Amino acid sequence: MFEAGAALKATHGADKVFDFTLGNPNVPPPDSFKQALAEVAQDREIDHAYMPNAGYPETRQAVAAQVAAEQGCPVSGEDIIMTCGAAGGLNVVLKAILNPGETVVVSAPFFVEYRFYIENHGGQMVTVPSLEGFDLDLDALSAAIDENTRAVLINSPNNPTGVVYAHDTIVRLTELLAEKSRAHDRYIYLITDEPYRDIVYDDIAVPGIFDKYPDSIVVTSYSKTLSLPGERIGFIAVNPAANCRQDLLAAMVFTNRVLGFVNAPALMQRVLARMPAERVNIGEYAKKRAALCGILSDCGYDFVKPAGAFYLFPKSPLPDDVAFVRQLQQELILAVPGSGFGGPGYFRLAFCVDDQTIENAADGFKRAIDAVK
Image 1 (tube, one colour):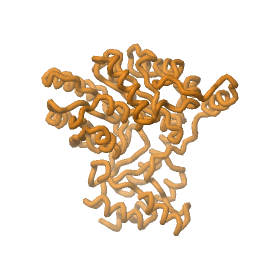
Image 2 (cartoon, helix red, strand yellow):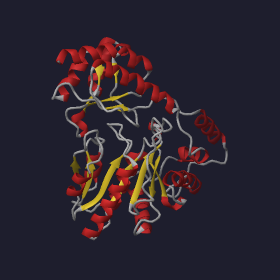
Image 3 (spheres, rainbow, N blue to C red):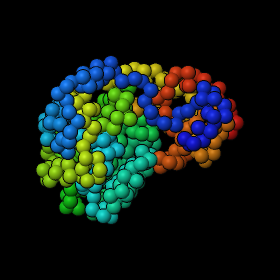
Image 4 (cartoon, rainbow, N blue to C red):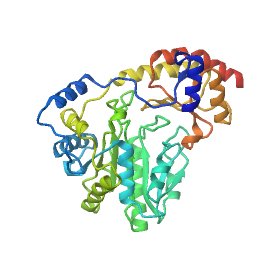
């Protein structure tokens, strides 16, 4: 899709091509980030040497205070490992916990790279379908968890659907995992991938997990909440109540190093220590969501309005989602087939784009759906 988009832009001009493929934030970082970055850069006492592989203690403590507020329970700096984004963090976690051939259960649709992360470390991904509206199917999850399951990995707000799992759903999931852990006499971890935690709408809140299930791990990044995807900065938070907590933390510190990350970027850690709770202007994404939802609704597309993140995952008017994405290309609209996310029959639109892209694509969306009816 990226290459097809580049070819279309070269032929027609970038302003004539409406690219909704990549979740690359277009809302700028907050002014407080720029101020903190300038302060750190001008601090003559700052060096660029190696540090503890888990990160600077002052950064970890600042992040722990943020996580404690989100999770509703005490969290210390020792429970935090700074990472090269959420992608780096997930690989660190999976390397630490997986034995060869063990499985990680994931609900579809899912972020496309999960399978590769799991297979990187000798694991196998087991996928289960979601319910109508993309909520977790707990019966399907229960059937998929067996004596070989090491973890369940969830993503809320979800990429690609924008769904936020409700508090009651998370409670029932953690009850299921506690039951399965007892039945199979092993720790089954709940890993939550949360880079979109703060990008939510309509006063919706993402529920915490630490107060509900001890063997839980949060992985996240500042790529979306501070619009810093290129800076590769994030963290792992381990539940203070986790079984074998010290061994688990030690394993992750070790894998953070030997996977080649060594440590999270020093400059970004220094900046975050000064402003761990800052966020981009979510209202900008809310306006873009409203504009794109309005256009697609008027055109007759079927979709679930996203509660978080900055994606729409409409149903394809054709059973073959790849074929419909090609139809959109005829209108110079670039989208991603849902098949890549384990969601055939749908397609993903990233609305973290400028307002003109959304507005100017309206006629093309209408012509595309009319052409296949």
